[in-house]
Each structure stands twice: as C-alpha cells, then as structure tokens.
Amino acid sequence: MGKVKSPGKKKWYYRLRDKYRLVILNEATYEEKLSFRLSRLNVFVTLTTTALVLIILTIFIIAFTPIREYIPGYMDPTIPSRVYALDITVDSLEKSMKEKDRYIERIRRIIMGEELESEGPDHLDSYINYDTITLRRSKEDSILRAEYEAQNQYNLYNFSSRISNKPEFEKQYLFFSPLKGILVNTFNIINKHYGIDIVSEEGTPVKSILDGTVIFAEWTIETGNIIGIQHSGNFLSIYKHNARLLKNQGDLVKAGDPIAIIGGSGELSTGPHLHFELWHKGTPVNPEEYINF
Image (cartoon, rainbow, N blue to C red; front, side):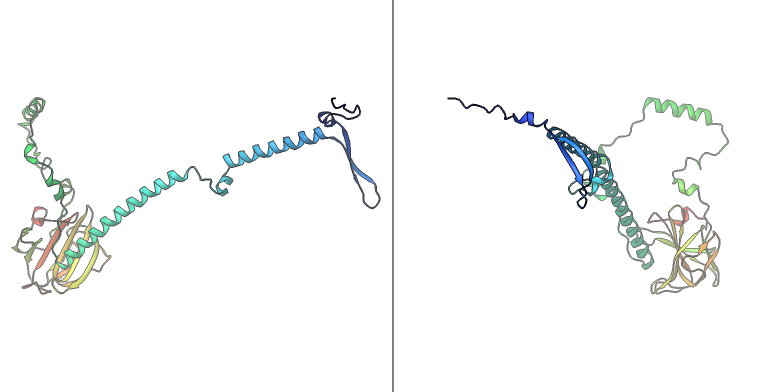
C-alpha cells in the first residue's frame, strides 16, 4: 500500500511563501522599534542578488582599477613593455659606457706613449673576398658625367675644394698653427711616431689649434709636461715636452691662446722642441694635412 500524505502538510516550495515577521524590540522595555514582514523566498532572492552584485563589483575592480596590482599573482599588463624599454635603455647605456672606457683607455695610452691596438674589423677579412667585387659604370652614369663636364668645362669657379677626397670635418674647421718653427721629424705611423716635432726658439709660446677644453695637463717621466685639449668634431690635440704649462685641466681655451712654453722636458726629449699630435675619433692623423706649418 502506498504512503498516505497528510492533508495538513505543505510541500517545501509552498512553504517558501509563508510570511514571517522580524521584530526588533528594546530589551529593557520590550518596546517594538522595527518590524519586517519576510518570507523565505524574499530572503533567498535578496541574498542571491546581493551576492551577484558583489561578484560583479569585484570583477570590475580587478579588471579596470589599479587595485588589481595588489592581488597576488596578478601582473600589470604594462610591465612587459616597460621591462623591454628598460632593457633597451640598459643595453644602450652599457654600449655607451664601453665606448667611453675604450676612448679613455686610448687617451691614457696616448699620454703614456704606449702602442695603440688596432680596432679595424679584421675578422671580416676571413670570409670576404674583395677580388670578386667589380665596379661597373652604367650607361646612364656615363651620359650624366659627360653632360656635367660639358656644362662646366669653361666654368672658372674652382670646384676642387668642394669635391675633395678629404673628410667633411676638415672643410669645417680652420686650424691654427701651434708653433712656428722648423719641422725636424714628421708623422710616421709605421714607426709609431704619431705626431710631428717642431723646433723653435726657447721661450716661444705653444698655442691651441682650435677652441676646446683642457682634459689633462700633467707631467710624465717620458714626455715631460704634456697638455691635451678636446675640440669639437671629436678632435684631440696633444702637446708634449713643454717647459711649462700655462693652462690647467678643465680650462676653456680659444684658437691661438697660449697654453704652454716650448721646452725639452721628459726622458724622450733630445732638446727644446714641441712634439705635436692630432687625433680624430681615437685615431692619429697627419697634422701637416690639416695645418700649415
């Protein structure tokens, strides 16, 4: 036989609508302060709605506000791009520092008269065959050259200075002669003589070839009183074997300003003279190609 349901017992989903009264009383006087009429269904709907609102609000805060950065395991999406930018900056700074250290090391070698190491790309010669490179003049190039020469063959203007094979920086600077005298020893990079020797009367002032800043003014055992000036265009001028220095490190000088007095100081000196060197980008160049002595 089946179980007979009690006629007075309601099903559970009907009981959700049963009304209840929530009363707040004063404990001392039993005075009714507040009262609410509730049902189980109202309480369930209210709690569910509140929970959904809190969940949505939490998701919004995590997704669209900076507070998400304080949540463990959540990363700021801009961090990878910032790290990449910082990595590029550090790499550039490291490269710049290496170049400055190499430049300072070369200046130290110049001051001490030590041998300089070649910085040419020697490793490229191992796999580049220059014998296979051929230069051919195109037909259009030949026609253009012929037209240009025909138009300018009677032009009295001298274009030689404008089409010179010398670097552009040589045409932009007017070099001042450091000393008027007799050249007794010329530039010879094969013999590691990176400058020229000029003999003049004792007491003759040595002058700066360009505007610049004195980066060192010291005395060494081999070269005596030596002064070096950094100029614009990555030029560096060196004056060795001076009897006395007239400028100090950090002084600003103009072209033609006296910076020292000719002398014969240092163990490598055989008499009063000036050993003058001109460097560009850490490489010695022949001063006679730039200055009229």
